[in-house]
Image 1 (cartoon, rainbow, N blue to C red):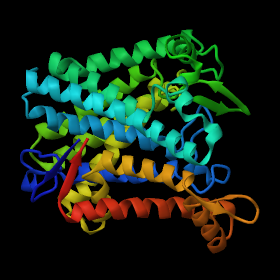
Image 2: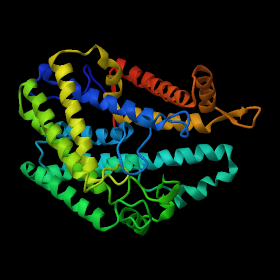
Image 3: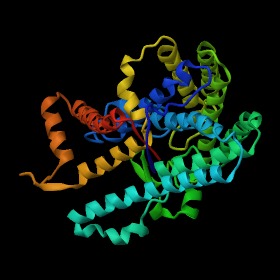
Image 4: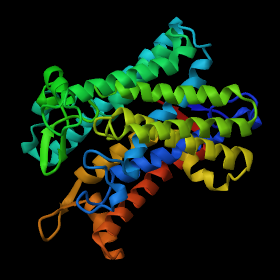
Length: 399
């Protein structure tokens, strides 16, 4: 992790655009981070508005879009980052890729250990030191980002770029076949996704997914489902390449919208044979979410970089210029809000920042769902305030 202070935000540079930059990329990234923080931090998981909950198994909700959007925009940004090295393998570039991969992986583990340690302070029965390695979840959000960044980057610098669409198609086709022949669309431990993780990671080191009133060892960020996620980041890279090859913003808009429409239509048609679901990161899930993300990017380029409608962007830009740092900050804040105790209420409920805020939102709102949503909005605003302080000082922390 390095701190960088410059005179301008590190928005991806694009030759031929106004000022050499596309603000839309940062804004899409910022919208995504805000969305991730919103859906990951409700006041109560039992009281959610339907759009703010993941699909139980098969299906797609607005909440299911936030993580794939981030993977897509990671691919777009990857094009600008690797272009500085002319897409050729070199010792400095390989070291950069490996270092960032290791850092992201370690952050994922350190966040878990931090939560375990903090809860252990207030609950001696939590057995922190026993759980530190005995039940550590090996894979997770940060670990998935590490893996797709590593393999995506290596593919880009080792393969001819004109073959990337073909390679992406092969990955998605092979994955669809694997799931189709391995009970991949069934919510059960016979699912090949669960079977591979159980064999390689062990049940104690996996996330246990819930659906249909059951809870089983099935990790949504497991080993096998990382494969289509690599294809996901490659699609983002390809869209970033396509919009960069054109000098006129109008052509960039049409290019992003055209690719978005093709992927969205393909995913929509194929879902009749290949179910769409985030928790197994299915082939149609990749196509549909990438199609929507590419279309949104095209619309943002139109409104921001062509029409100059930028006044509303500042809120999201504070997230967009320090995306992973803001997400990490929000993740750590959520742990602190829920774990640190200041005594107990009369009913025995722990007095925490989370419970303090939820009681306030309960008083201010008219329903449990509204209270839960308001808490999530307040949480996003708190995290944004920290990110905005860095943005105003032009401090950009790269992870």
